[in-house]
Amino acid sequence: MVPEKTPIVSPFLPELRRYNDLVSDIFNSGWITNGGPLVQELEQRLALYLKVKNLVCVSSGTVALQLIYKALGLQGQAITTPFSFVATSSSLKWQGIEPVFCDIDNATFNLNPDILTFDQMNKAIVATHVYGNPAGTQGLEKFAEKNAVPLIFDAAHAFGVDYHGSSILSRGTASALSFHATKLFHCIEGGAVATNDDALADEVRALRNFGIKEGQLSKLIGINAKMSEFHAGMGLCVLDEISFILEKRQELWSLYREKLEGYVSFQKWSTSSQNNNSYAPVVFGSEELLFSVKLALEKRNIETKRYFWPSLDSWYPSESSELRVSEDIASRVLCLPLFPGLETKKVISITEQIKQSVEQHNG
Ligand SMILES: *Cc1c(COP(=O)(O)O)cnc(C)c1O
Image 1: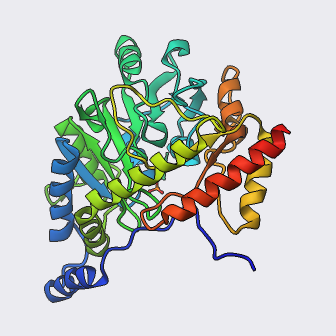
Image 2 (image 1 turned 90 degrees about the vertical axis):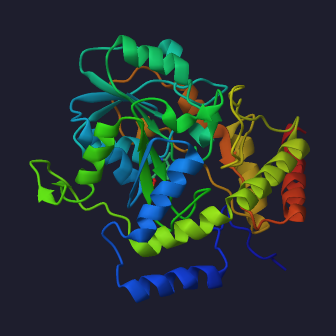
Image 3 (image 1 turned 180 degrees about the vertical axis):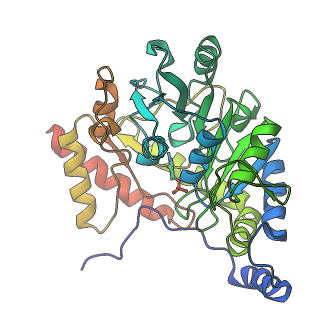
């Protein structure tokens, strides 16, 4: 008998009663979108919780990136990482900006600040905090400052991550968050721009609403990237449960690591930060071994995901230098199931299966 499916991720759902209460409020007020009270409340609570000066909620993480590029008037090329979700690069392409890939560090999986090179066509740096791990922030800041270009973070994985005691979202020019259903914190669909720059935040607020500023249409070419009240309501319910979500993830990912020590390798996390346990990535000795583990788990109806794979340079060939580390890590990394409802005994059985496959493979 095939066991019940274990998905890679199962979106966190709050108590229905709590969400229904908010939906009743929305029905009673009739205010269903256009910066209603729940979006305002969510923005305030998230800014406090995430310790950022400005937090602007939008309709997705991808559009959050696009609004940042647009607000900064970026054109030309941007230095970015090939080891990320496709949206990091496709959002640039969508804005007519060419991604120029630089290789990653083989321990942190983040852009390697030591090998960055700069030319006059590069107008920005777009770095991802991979699996939430702070992206070599000090090195990138120095590089961005020296070359006088903005530093933008794809912080889709970095909800609640601190770095040197303050929010990782307070670093760089601006950060984009994703609140998609599969993320640690979610609004079903949604995202946000976080920035310390008040003027930039105002620009993003106008751009998400057709370019309308203080009730007046401005010269800005905007778009509709607003979050609805129903999405904000889900976010408020999930935020109420965030301590439970974080604790549960911490417990499960620690258990994975303890059981798999010596069988796989792990991403090296920044020593100035704590893991938010947003993903469960493990790296195998070879792609061949990854395939056999993936297959063995599939036979037991356990879903895993090659994330990120492939290295983005295979989608968007560019003049980039060699990207050997990104291609190598992308070929050997596998994300395991991780979500608050996952049972401890399931984690143990997954790790036992992996150990068995590794032992068989190593003969
Ligand atoms: C999820 C994700 C995005 C896109 O966010 P959406 O809200 O789905 O648009 C962008 N970058 C990274 C690294 C992601 O994981």
